[in-house]
Length: 446
Image (cartoon, one colour):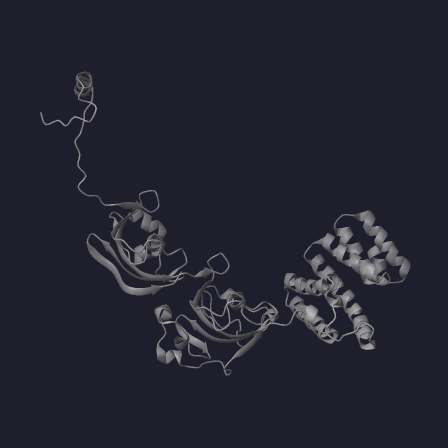
């Protein structure tokens, strides 16, 4: 008599069918708790206690301000209140990171983690906290804020956090000379500094710095108020060069890494010797970009300055090649070659004349430089085993100067190693015809 009949089923025949063949349930939903299966395997089940701000989710590499507690069997195993964690923080285990990535700002939640999963993901934490592998673990967390960081190389070896945005449109390029101030910490100990950081950054970012004001005011290891570096000279650590190229004037950024090779410099640097940090040290570098000086476009300068720039880059390429960085040296030589190939060398500055004696003298000098840099690029390509490129670059020199024997030598060598033997033999014979006694040409011919 208490059976509720669904609408449309009170007809006699339908009612008979309902009573004889179907079991019905009268259900009222009183309440529910929404749970999230974070790994879709039932290993981490999250329950939201307090919902946060919609759409304010921390991504994989955010620096976060968080409180969390790890419990087992109702007993607290570890508890931290309002701490700041970076992507390379030792205590930021995989399970806690997975939970943080699912949270909105101001969210409070609880997550039940299977002990076997915790053991697999964070074995050191399980050992340190003496967790029971037969009992589930609970993580309670509250996310207060976060700042997005950039994974500089896409391999989690270095991260960049922008603490203060610089002037838009003032980012340096590799040819720029930058004025910078830096602070360098290794395992939270300051070892280099020439400026005060805290006055330069907004109040909401202060917590992500975690520097004592007295330490912040200490100058150590650097005499100059401002350091000047030309980025293409490779005397700055690679990670700093990469970070600086994404900054604007007056910007302040923080670099974090635990990989010492990211602080290596290609060319020697007194300020950054190889021993400045050890591998696995937690390295934090704060950079203040005070100014940027980027050279004028090559097409806007007079021939004397063009010559000076080309010779500077040629000398730099030689230093880089001597340091063993063949690809980078090749790129420097190719940049010089582009100036000739794309016609930039032929542009005239205001008041300049191609008919002047001084212009003609410098252009003749640069023609010799052009041949040398093209051959140097060809040699780099050969060392990189790009044999056809070697031959093509050398061929351009033959077209410029049909009597330049080095060009025949490297064109033939490139073709030979590219297994184009007949073409190689034709080229070397042409070189031998120019100078039958040249030892290099003879050796290559034989």
